[in-house]
Amino acid sequence: MAAGSGSDDETTRPEGTTGPVDPPHPSDALYADGPETGEIRVSQEQIRADAEQLADEVGTGVQNGPSDDGADAGSGDAKSSDEATDAEASVDGEAGDTTPDPAEAAEPDEVIREPEDISSDTTDGETGEARRVGAEGETKPMGGGEERPNPKAALVYNPIKVDADALRASVERLSAEAGWEEPLFYETTVDDLGDDVTRQALEVGVDAVLVAGGDGTVRAVSEAMSGSGVPLTIVPSGTGNLLARNLRLPLDNAETMIRATFEGDTIGVDIGFAALRRRDGKTEEYAFVVMGGMGLDAAMIANTNPQLKKSVGWVAYVDGAARSLPGAKPFRIMYQIAGHRLHSARVQSVLFANCGSLPAGLELIPEASVTDGSMDIVVFQPKGPLGWIFVWRRVAWDNSFLRKFRAGRRVLALRTRDNAVRYARGAELEVGATEPQFVQLDGDEFGEAVSVRARVVPAGLDITVPKNHDVAGL
Image (cartoon, rainbow, N blue to C red; front, side, top):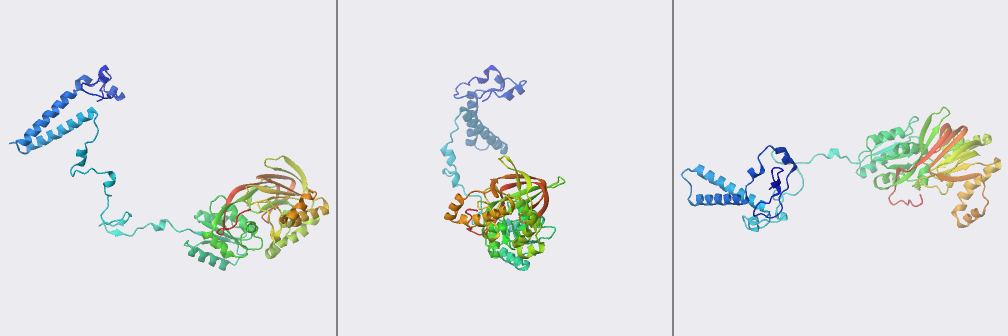
């Protein structure tokens, strides 16, 4: 029993007791004006004697039967019995004996029960499933299914590049077969290449986005999808399909890719961003998933007939090249790759690429990977008309043909290197030109800029591929 004040006798052990004595409690100082400890302490012997006396009195009262006082006597006896029981329990507790009595634990049917012996709090015959009941206890159907809708997909498509009716019908049918909700459909326009409507789809909480259109549409939709965590399915359309080609996706079976949205795999691929600084100092940033460039390649795209490009796709760039090459002049740039020293060079074009394969089987950058977390940089600096022959030989012959064979790779190893095409790799590139130059991203012209800062976001875009699609070497 703890002492009531801070006097010296607080830790005095009462007679006839063993074991530790409670130390004084700090709050006892709050009651310093109360009675002294000696005034309220009662010896255990006195408590035990009082308890025994009460027990004897209760026993005598029971033997003698009800007293003449009737109910009052019985009430008093019951109260005395309770007090005696409490007193005995108090004494036993102070003595330190807390071991339960097996006989008492077994009352009233002399069976000692373990926790697992106790039956659950359910009605006989009922299962453990939750259910809804009415005011009278009758079972009612569970509600709330509307709060957890099935997944929903959105299709963003360029109506010029696809058969819109057939494409929408396929997406609706396969979505229903997969148990998804009715999909949403968005058309691109001249003013919205697909990025704005894609953001609208993400705001309503779609679980997947499909894109069907040219490389420009895929670029715009990818820009809006970057970092969202929502998978993007590329439904090959048009003539380019450069990202789909580099991912080795089927180019002639739209339904295979649509079905992959609901039952395929997802991989993370890199996505690039290019910040373009204009002549007036204004900076704009756009995404690219294939490659961007500054200089002649962008000028070729800017000089390509738009109607011809709609008709024949990338082949139309031959027209742009014919318009651009005669007046092409090298220009001075300063460029730096992250982690490397600053360079100065006179070039015709500088490319920053996420992918390396072009149409017609051309390999511009054979070692480029869309999943390695870095960009591949290509600097074209041919010297005179003859220099363009070396550029063409490197791209169309060396990279696209000889490198595929062991004997061809031996030939390349023995050949004297030329500086017409130079390769580098890094996570970020800064390029500044003495005069504004044309810039292109994924085959679309983006005007002139005096500098470009290109960077790559590793695995910044989630792409859907068919189930068990071979992703080795991507």
